Image 1 (cartoon, one colour):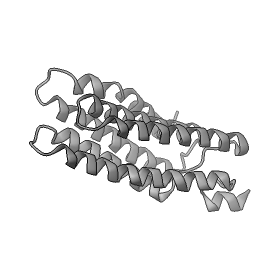
Image 2 (tube, helix red, strand yellow):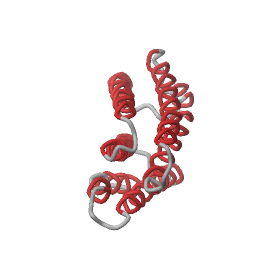
Image 3 (cartoon, one colour):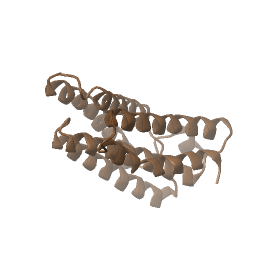
Image 4 (spheres, helix red, strand yellow):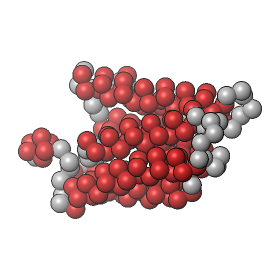
Length: 185
């Protein structure tokens, strides 16, 4: 077990903490949960940096890292839906997008025994999604119209679906999304 994989496991362990803290009776529970979400995202950046810099990229890491990210993001989204800060349809869109991506990754894994890497739009959509959810969590007590949350999450979801379309295009063309890897095989 290397450091990047350990950080991904730590992030997986933090997933259940978010709803426990978010729905607790703690003062400013939403901000504490947002802080856990922020710390988890920081470990995501850190594990990726360490893995690339020290050539510690493993198959396990390429599975654990996105799994931890997706579970954390979906957990935060569900918390915001239950607390009525986001509409249910946002969770449905994310659920089906992740289901398609997971199925696609499984198909590619069976074909080439590897997990396809994310594309730049996927990374951008993840960053926007994180930012929107984090800001909604932190500022949920402020008096603002619900439409602000809906517009913000809609922008994040449009980027997410666009990333899915690019990803699926790679899958249907039989590509991994990584031209360097394709040229070696």
